[in-house]
Length: 269
Image (cartoon, rainbow, N blue to C red; front, side, top):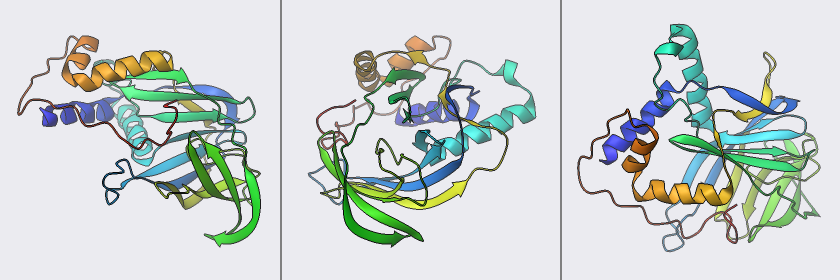
């Protein structure tokens, strides 16, 4: 049955006809790539979840998402444009985009889109982090960096930022310093964001945006739906897409154990 679910999810990514809504008038200036590391289970510190992430930057706003997701989205759009076959696409996965975090530093607003067969859009807390900038400096990937310390949702982070890239933004929800955050980690080194590269964007006008094909909801309602999905993904999917036949095969589905060490320790928002 796991193979069936994975196949369906893969189809969502492959066939997704994706459109977007601008959250602001900010145009994309650059893209920053990070290596994200997270020890999710404190009973086994040897297991580290890692993923390549991308921060899409405007002057005052950003979208943080998976690098693989960004590539799959662009590949899908190119494929659909090439085939000119939009009308033949079924409902399957037309909204599947993955998880994204949007931050508008100027308007002090933040939002999130979570993909779970459909996309669910909800507002989140704007990250107000009281950073304390120290005197330590270092050169990281050719950038002169300064060290700052701040707390967010139960973790104290040490961040290295550079004024050479004057954005008040950084990976994930870490923001509010007078320069781009290059590297960051919590004091226990259980959550890390490591700089890979910075690239200026050159191309047609592109807005800093989240995908518009979504269902507006609240955090509380989204948590309810996520619990329903985790309890029985096939039943959840079948209810949303009744015209798609889903067959249970293999061993009985077992819900994965919850992460005992979430990034945000005192709030899932």
